[in-house]
Image (tube, rainbow, N blue to C red):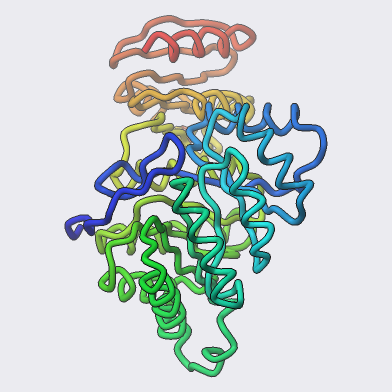
Length: 350
Ligand code: SF4
């Protein structure tokens, strides 16, 4: 793995992106900002517990901007307003208590409008994320054969605007639904400046293809030393985006946060009928636990005890009996109906 690219630190609410700080995990909420802020707040609380560090919302009108303001005041994580084109909406959002806006100065239009947005952001100390997307490149670049090259050129156009306005509180992203294009664009752009990089494979697809594309893309970009914050873009829930992002960071060795869950795939040797059901409960619980530990859930008396014994905490189901291992030794034997609660309290005690 190459040495991590040196980027400037950019403060997004309570999270520092870049500057050698840990790579943060973010997600985008999928629903419109409806009136029922309590249920959105509850969801943000859960995402925060799962390890999500930044949340983003599309802001479509002034009413949504006001709701985002209210939500920002009660949210456990910094919130980002995602705006397309409308400079007035960007100004409106910046009156609020948000932590960052995502807008491309190159899409705003006249220079005086760009100036107004950047001046206000500078005055409030708010960073801007500039998101170059392979699917919405400026018209002048749409004929470029290599989309990675076009994305870098589009980012350079944004860099010129920023330099002219002397605005440097910026995070960049260059994303495409094509993994190779995204990797190449980020490698090239990373050489041009020291702005932090928000990584992602955009429109990566449904859960399984999205996880595969994102894992391969992030792995290559991390090995090039790139990446200050990540968002896994899935046609799935924000929760699954966060789980995937955390797992990718953990496997890449970029975080120790979160439980490493080992589980057997199950085969005909199992006598533990409720293996997957039990695993799902344990897995959901482990996603909310911020500990550096390995937990194993195994399905039979053949390989199960071996794997379960090497984990910090393990469980092996044999018929209706559950054996719980801790630090390689049998801790207790129990029945299935109370096993989850017992295992959960052992996780808590780790
Ligand atoms: S632990 Fe047992 S049940 Fe699970 S895959 Fe291995 S042999 Fe099969």
